[in-house]
Amino acid sequence: MFVAIANTPRDYAWGSTTAMADLLGTDPSGLPEAELWLGAHPGSPARILDPSAVGGSPDLAAWIETEPRRALGPHPRLPFLMKVLAASAPLSLQAHPTAAQAREGFKRENGWGIPLDAPHRNYRDEHPKPEIIYALSDRFEALCGFRPHEEAALVVTALGLEELAPRVADLPELFAWLMAGGADVGTLISRAIAAASSWAGADEVVSAAADTVRVLAQAYPGDAGIVCALLLNRVTLRRGQALYLAAGNIHAYLSGVGIEVMTASDNVLRGGLTPKHVDVPELLRVLDFTAGPPPWLAPDVVTDSLEIFRPGTDDFVLARVTGGAEYPLSGPAIALCTSGSFTIDGVRAGAELSRGEAVYITPDEIALTISGSGELFVATTP
Image (cartoon, rainbow, N blue to C red; front, side, top):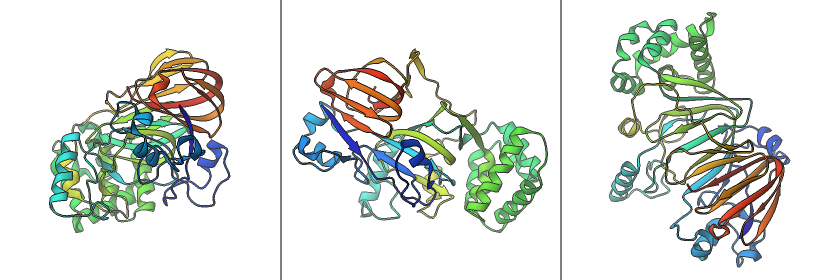
């Protein structure tokens, strides 16, 4: 079964007022359009365009609750959420728990009697939240994971914080100290901003770090995340490149447009660069302090018109289709067309998609035959 879906972009303050509309061919709302959610997440379930086709259910979450077997097959829930993300300002510095940490944290906060919708709650469900980000804009800027120690020492020294260089070998201690803030950290922030403002060197790594400081200082003046960011990889994704952010990876998206696919969960531990709830001790509990290169995710190139990003999680994969393709289904799927037009046929039904249109596909379609040209993204189970 193919069910046409749509949604209204979330108007978070960091969203772009034009990029989402430019991508999908829609009329801009005049508000920031930050994230378009395509899934059954209760925070913003995808709207069903023809409720009469699914017994009157107005959205995907309601339909799945009413007819789970028809909508999901043997799957207990829709395990993934697909988003279009359009950032014109930095998002929060954050990480996500492992499955075990999520279960324990959810049970713990339930035991404390914290309401699920409380602003200060960290764990709103029992699920992890790994994610893929695929760059649709020519440049997508992000911070992700801790830099190699030698590179971190180079950056802090070049930007006038040389006393931190010997401490990068103990990232947990240094990061916790910086996150705690205080007068000494405030002084470091001021010095880093001054050095970044006057930096004119040729080193690309330091230049990118100086730019990070300038961007964050403008968006979140005085935030300890400004200096913490110097310890993280600054990554520029070009169009078509992707990252996989596993549990414990600290990250913050800075700007750009992309397709994001993640395990459906609300479990976010924030450390700064946000007006939302920040819980530094809990963030430190879930962080993976392993230093190393950015977590690039290369696709499996199946044909010239089909590539699949497989992060290794049980919850989702992301396929990118640019022409004719065959794709077997192991579970439910969501397809979004970002350019051109496509015809998608399963074993029972089919659909035609043009730019900006999306469809939910039930598992009983078994295999997809896709024709057309442009760019089509399909999120589904592995």
